[in-house]
Amino acid sequence: MAGADDVAAFLDRHWQSPLPAQGAAPAHFTPQEAALDPAACGACHVQQYEDWRGAMHARAMGPGVLGQLVDMAPEARDEHQACIRC
Image 1 (cartoon, rainbow, N blue to C red):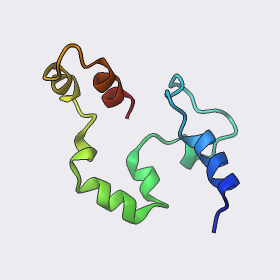
Image 2: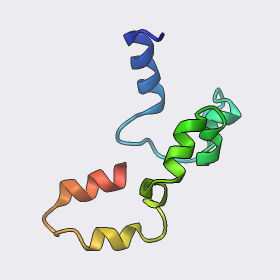
Image 3: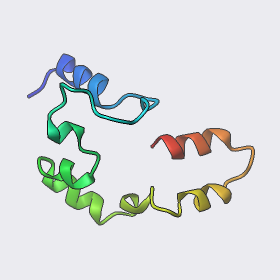
């Protein structure tokens, strides 16, 4: 079982917020770490990937995401930003 330090190190490496600028992956990343395709995550996280694929969250960042933001109240900046960063 991973200790708190292991979890913190993992989160620092893979769950930065806000997301850093995207582009080429760092040279030290494995091909699996560098992949942005959800199926790449599913190679190791099979159950999580299957759960995600069947959820609405799997379609959350599709072409319609900007349309979803339009329906939010203009003064709801925090909600807009949370949606985009998720």
